[in-house]
Image (cartoon, rainbow, N blue to C red; front, side, top):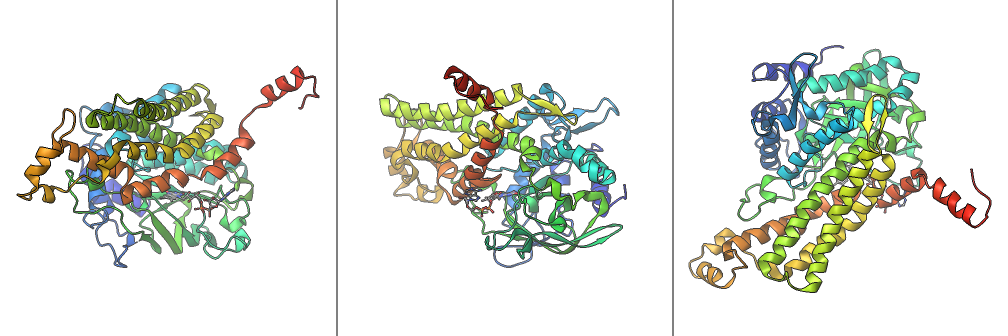
Length: 496
Ligand SMILES: Cc1cc2nc3c(=O)[nH]c(=O)nc-3n(C[C@H](O)[C@H](O)[C@H](O)COP(=O)(O)OP(=O)(O)OC[C@H]3O[C@@H](n4cnc5c(N)ncnc54)[C@H](O)[C@@H]3O)c2cc1C
């Protein structure tokens, strides 16, 4: 494989650290100063991602996940030693081959979810799921172009060796749907092909965390009507020349404190629109191009990513059940029957998602050497998780009563006239007024802040919304056995 500029820069950064294939948090931060072009919500160029107000808190937070790779307490959860060379690598880039591999990955995911409270839907360990997912159609890619099909294997190895963070881009930008897909102006497409690579023009929407990562992986498996120039399964370094990331408005305040905003003070993953203005992508990052036969295989390549998304929500739901119980314990409402029923609904949500994940892992299959959970069960589980999420948020808010607005900033609390009165009037069961205040600040960030709204939008559509998930479930869930049972039982003609 040709040695690219990215690989040189990452190699140089890795050479200065304690491990050849693992970055520390500060190496990760250094790796983001790579000339990437970002326009912020004020219309200004972002000079340094690690210090810019829209990013600084989240970059620190993601950097800690890199540091976990060196912390003796979390080292074995986040990394593994490859017996082939005796070197330590990020577990995030290990291709799961067995049920045990997947379970270990889920422990890594538990760590990243509890660290970010799951409000980062694309943590460090997510992006590999999409790249490894491409292996599931590697045989179909190979039929068209064996050299490019090999590139995906090489890209996964490259990512493993350089401890990179990537994220995925699937849908097209929103524009007039009455225009045929392959004529919509913003669709990302090849406008030139050379022996060395391709030149891209167009855009991709909502690249969550792309500006805090190193690569985006692109697949057009959600757009069956596109033409050959739009059929892309590729990776693109985010610092590519001609690529501009335009940030949406931030939803967290960069100067907020842990006391006032126990979740939002850690920042957010910034969604952005990626504009490709004649971006050259070297051949080494092309896995399949112009193969229109692959244009409707989104579900197949997405199973591992969808398993990650559902598992993250399962861990979030565990946290929700802890929050529900703490609300009613602190408010002393835990003896009311209606309140207990509400808590039970949150518990049921958490238990149901867990059941889907465990069942999907139990009914997994091995394809192209990759251990993949049951697509049927992951799809059914995702539908449940999406449809019930708003209800769970509503229950959490409802259980709080006035708690979500009768909470005050540290500055208000420090006022000599009101602070002592708050201390006197507002305590909860087993907690001081100030502790109760901090707890409800946390519940606000989790359920009601601008950031919570953005996360709710994310949970609803980040990897296709309920109508599309239902469509997929109808198409793939095998119900032939029960259908034939019913037909046989009633002496109706059976179906093949
Ligand atoms: C906060 C956030 C973060 C995201 N992050 C990422 C990311 O990191 N990577 C990524 O690839 N994508 C990301 N997405 C994009 C997401 O994948 C898309 O929003 C999603 O696939 C829906 O596509 P769309 O936005 O084009 O909606 P549209 O397809 O325009 O849908 C609009 C509405 O039309 C209806 N609709 C659409 N299709 C159907 C159908 N077949 N049947 C019935 N009704 C339908 C639905 O009600 C839908 O809400 C993110 C989105 C959000 C909001």
